[in-house]
Image 1 (cartoon, one colour):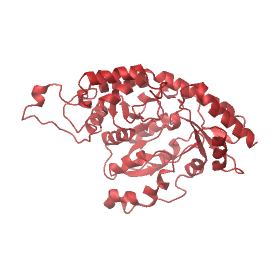
Image 2: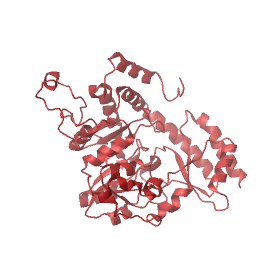
Image 3: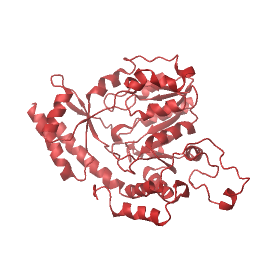
Image 4: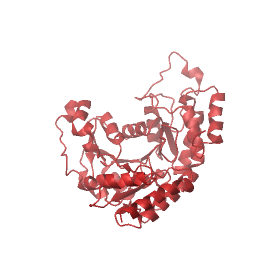
Length: 399
């Protein structure tokens, strides 16, 4: 088996349980229920609902908080395209708030400036394993009657002012895609303390079956009722976004080992940070007092004018490093958005909207081209050692 450090006998054991039980769908509830309970407990929330991606989690979350036609959703432009896609999927209007140039997360002060009577939700991103600044965002939400959906795809077990972030926002979304702290290959899971929101999200992700409850994903708990010709099966709108039972089996096993994975990433990030501190042009993401990052990746601003980002990366790879990853283009710079293709989603609403190509979020525009993301998803500190050493050699080469 490849990646033996990440996948082991426990994953195989739970997958065998699924196969031995008859290989039911996600509506059978067995492994999904167990995974949900384990993850909710780890993240400090009452309810968890599994999905087939970290995009469908966000889609369900926006629908659950009532985002619909013409509503505005405030989000950061420094994130994956999923955050834009789910806003458009609800025929809502994206509003971009600038970032803090040191944490790279959304700036609550700019969010406050962007709120209008049409604002329905705030969707911050807890980027690279670091929580967004939640208290002022939640205060804005409470004062204006706006829900906060924290996209924590990269921030399992992150802490904010001593608290696990999973219990703070109205809804917190995680991804279980292959690069994340825990993985099911593809997938996602949301947590919340709100029973109504949990039930809405579960129904949205499973075709609106009437039998679904906040903590129960089974649709046939009583087959005599379900198979009655007069029974009405669907009482809500929904998609088929369910997580397969085999994936949930992996998720359960991975959750039981989450602490190990996070400790390893944190240790490797500390190795990178020690090397980066030997120069003044690799500026790591700032972790404010009271925050605990779980370092999905180790990320720096590259602040050197006499040597290009690309030249530094090429030398790093030449000296034995894994490729340095660039940050995503800002959402409003992506071709989908800049070309106006997105307006085809809902021409009556979108055709009259215009966004400037520059100056909309100046701090994000300045930071995004400088970000360097270093791989820390290794099986041991020993495996990461040569990659960290390659960074030291690169810094020395360009001294």
